[in-house]
Amino acid sequence: MTPAEAEALVIDVHGLTKRFGKKTVVDGLDLSVRRGEIYGFLGPNGSGKTTSIRMLCGLLTPDAGGGTTLGHDIVREAALVKREVGYMTQRFGLYEDLTIRENLDFIARMYGMDSRRTRVDAALQRLGLAERATQLAGKLSGGWKQRVALAACMLHEPRVLLLDEPTAGVDPQARRSFWEEIHALAASGITVLVSTHYMDEAERCHRLAYIAAGRLLASGTPAELVAQAGLHTWELQGQGAAAWAAKIEGLPGVELVTRFGNALHVSGRDEAALQTAVQQFAAAGTWRVLPPTLEDVFIFLMRSAKA
Image (tube, rainbow, N blue to C red; front, top):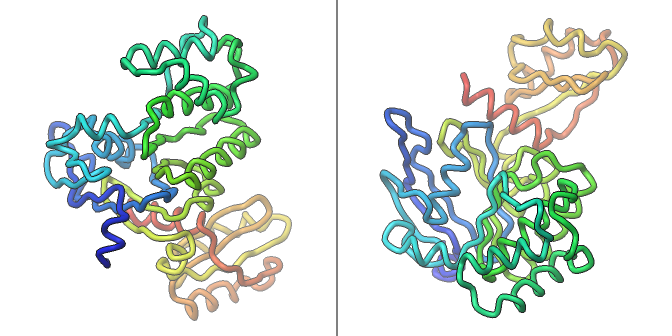
C-alpha cells in the first residue's frame, strides 16, 4: 500500500477479536475502507457482522487487535470515534406518536447538538422528508421509517456511516430508493460500510468483505471476488431440471449445486472434471456455460465455511 493509499483509509483495523464467554464471535478481522467508498459487509446470521461494526464505531472494546476509524484509535479514543460516525442499527427506535420532525428534534436535543432546527431542516431536505415532516412516524411504511433512521444518523454530519442491514424487511422499490441515497452520500465524500444479505445490493458496493464464524474469508471488488473463487458454472434448463440435483451433487468436480426455479446451477473449481460430470446428464435438458455470479460465490463460501 502506498503512503497516499494509507492516508485515504478511513477504517483501518487489524486482528480484531471479540469473545463473549468462551465463544469467539470475531476472530482476527482485518479490514481497510477508503474515503468515499461503499464497502459491503456480508455473511450469514451469527457471523459476527454486527459485533464487528460495533467495535469499529467504539461501542464495543475488542479483546485483541486494534486500529483506527477516521484516524482515532478505536480503543483509546472511542469517544472521538462516536462523535464522527453515524451508526444505524437493524431496528431503529422511532417514537410512533411523534412526527418525523419531532423525532429528529428530540434526538438532536438528547445529544445536545447546537443549531438543532438547522440540522433537522438539512436532514429532512437531504433525505427527501421535508414534505412529510409533520407526518406521524407510526403511519410510515418500512421504507420511509428507514429514511428517517438514516436522517437521524446524519444530524451530526458524520464522515462515516455504519449501516447494519438497513433495508431488511423493506420492499424492493424502497430498497432501490434507499440505495440511491447511499450512493449520493458516498459521492459527497461520506464513507459507508453497510451489511446486507441481498446480492443485488452487494453488487452495488465498491468493495466487499465476506465473513463467516467471525473470520474474513474473502474481500475485494465484486469482480475480484468472483475471480478469486475460481468457480466454473454450468446451467441446466428445462422442466424438472431441479429434480436432477440429487444425482449430480457429489460427483467429482461438482462442488455446488443450486436450484433456480426450472434451472440448475452446477459449479466447481476443476473445469475439466466439472464438464465431465455434467456431460453424463446431457439428456436431462439444455446445458450452457455461464459466468459464475456473486451469489454462486457467496453460497460456495458459506458452504465451504461450514465444511
